[in-house]
Length: 223
Image (tube, rainbow, N blue to C red; front, top):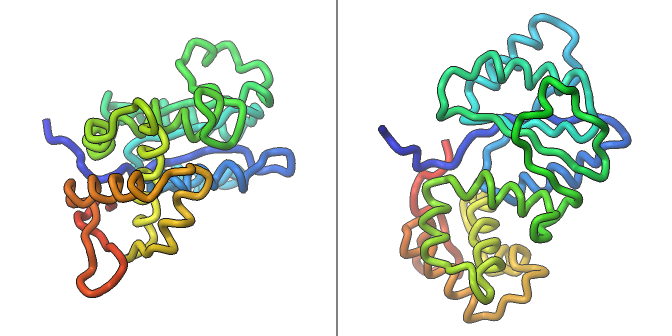
């Protein structure tokens, strides 16, 4: 079976309302190497349903946040269930247990990722859950994990590597200023940062731009 080496295109369905923190939720996905297609939770016409169905079909897998039970997100989940024909195209349910109401009985048995915060706190953070249970299955992430042991500062180094790859989704270059932004809050020292960049270069995921203090794409890792 052919292994997909590019990072995935992901359909994400979530509630749009004043009570749902859309900005903080989407920030996590911006910082991870996913190409994201967001659902439109105001489905009013058959045409929009067709668009939604097509977007789910194009995605490698889907993620649905059911923290605030919403009929439109449930409809998107239903579309994904009806289109699920291959085991290689799964969907995930995520749930903020501080916000969630009772999930309907017909999907209570479905495995889901539970979180309590929109950050990378171990176990509790949405970012941590997505990295450990979704992103960790991706080809290049497995390679990076093998090169960066989890012990000591491993978790922070891995997060730095993931954020660098996410940065390359929408940028042609990675500058020293970009790196300073990426490592903010990690407390990684210069030798740690150098180690992560070296690993990504050895995997040919990034390469040095000749004559410049910057890096660019080493491989085509996004569709």
